[in-house]
Length: 286
Image (tube, rainbow, N blue to C red):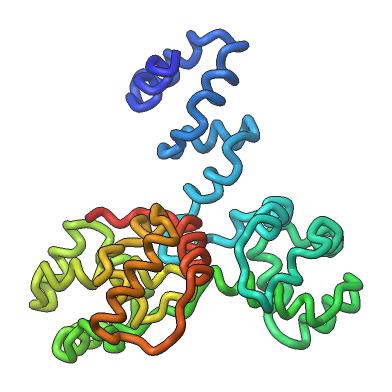
């Protein structure tokens, strides 16, 4: 049945015909069996209708440089807060998660996109605090947590392994940071087009694509994107699949040999990095 399901739905002309032939009582079983294989949009649509594959569905809907915060409902965010690794100063967000987020829902806030807008600045936070009964300090932390899904893009010229000449050529096209570069490096065809327009070598463009990809991970600045690349974790997907202890040891040894950064990066930092990477969509074709 699973083989039939996959063959039918990966072939656009057959999927509707074969799906109708599957007995109704078997359809939900077939979906449940295959819920870990939601790489196709039509499957994700079915999963949403059946209310399964929730977390993977969220991840697969995230397209573009940033996560679409409207795709994460307040109820889904409850689970994220409960299980997420956090820096010590944010761990108070784990207390009374259901109660606090239910108070947010009462204010007609349905998803993280709407929450981000509701907590956009100090005055809005104060007003939201009065309306919801939640403490301002809590809302400030929550805003930081949510805003962290959209980290500030890294400037191209700040990467240690990008020359002034390359950065200058991109700036001439109005490309100054990783966000503005992202759409231009998604596929080999787009990278070739960028190479032809700028005179930057294809090898250099691929390197820029990898640095851009890594920069999407929360807390990964221009230096650490370079470090991850040099350590062999050269895409967001590679980081997402990494073992945090192995990543820590590799980065630690690399920095010991080359003294790239002075900061004290520990195993928990690697856990946070990996967790953030796992929430991204991996749509760059290398």
